[in-house]
Length: 250
Image (cartoon, rainbow, N blue to C red; front, top):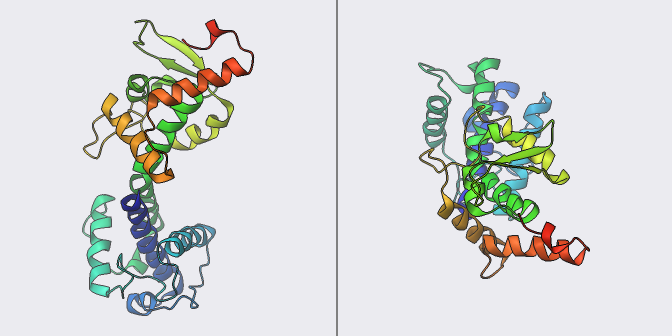
């Protein structure tokens, strides 16, 4: 989880610097040497929102005052290092042959960079979404791993589970609290893409769900937590709520 938080921190930090360079016309060196009390004057809502997201991450990782845009070790961020990271971001966003400073980026190029945020945040999104599908929907690990965007029907508020343990496809109702998170998540992936992928972009397997839940439990201090326990908790809750036992499990 700490690694994931640092990944988000790096992205929001560098995007905040890029947006500050575009909107304030200050030099990169001037921007990255700002102290905590010296806030860039962002003009657009998107830039202001990105900066607020960055500040939240920065303060959680480095609560002691210091540089506004530090390195991972809370040291001075050097212009040369920023330029290396900026070049990498451009390459990842498919922006080729850009030899200028960030203030020369076009609006469309900035949009391409902003879309990279999902890639930086996807690993942690996947952990929470997998936990929610297990905890609210009582899905089996294999069912979570197999899900694709094409299996989620937001308008009908249903999920199609393919090749279940009963060897039959099944439609289940989406728990209301999951509708909005699913909607926001799905807009970032292709129509037939898997919901959950590894760093290699390969679809999850059953073992990846177990690994995600282990990380989830470790982060929240929950020992010996497993997908099976999520499913059992849902069943016990339904029984305690008066739902007949034959409706408690698929």
